[in-house]
Image 1: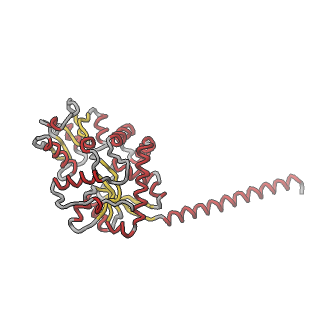
Image 2: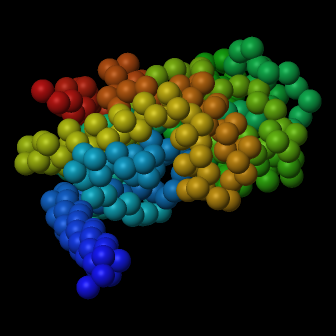
Image 3: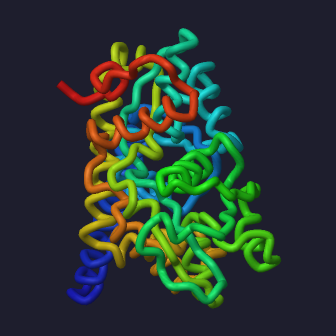
Length: 328
């Protein structure tokens, strides 16, 4: 056998060994990934539907924060906050994204729950108009203006009614379903509309202006939280710790790397123009609607409960320690 032939055979043998090694490594890696997935805790989170302002939830999922905390998360849509809480109570969902005061209202009927995390901290409504008026300096500027909001007993309706009343004005509110506020303004049915992002930024891009911000007016306010049955905290406290930690990671990214968060949100909401999405996210961050902390503060909880008492949804007390879960 010539030296050339021997070298060729040695080279081929070396290549074969490398290929076998890589194949074995790939199989072991795949098995490891499968085992990791098998070891993750599967949980279901119910929500009304996909909303831009639920950004921390989507960032936690799409950026892998849930996965890193050992959670395999599935998000389902219910079509209503009341249906979301019903899904949690019935056990068809482990957690629900909804108005956190629902747990206090529900407890009065014997269905106990807790609020695990903060998702939207602040009233995420901005007063927009196509009229040629200056931004409002105080609520008295509402005189002689009608305002379109989501129907009563929504938080938007209740707070807009309160804004009129606090200024000593008779409420002049036009109720409209989700998606109808801007058309109402364009049709002249109302002068001002209370809208959510990204609809606010979309309207501004079409010539509307913002005349006031409820987020600025009311500050910290427990608007949307992640809720669960109280037995979840008793039976599976580590799941709550992991979920809170994942959401905190998402909140940190939203505040510290907004461009990266914006890029992820444009993927999840392809129907929203990137420029509009950027403006919407910036406004939500600047006005404090996207919280810094996944923990709900006493102040935010107190304001939300006070509103529920004012509109008659709740008569008794709703102690922070009873309804707001915090790790010990």
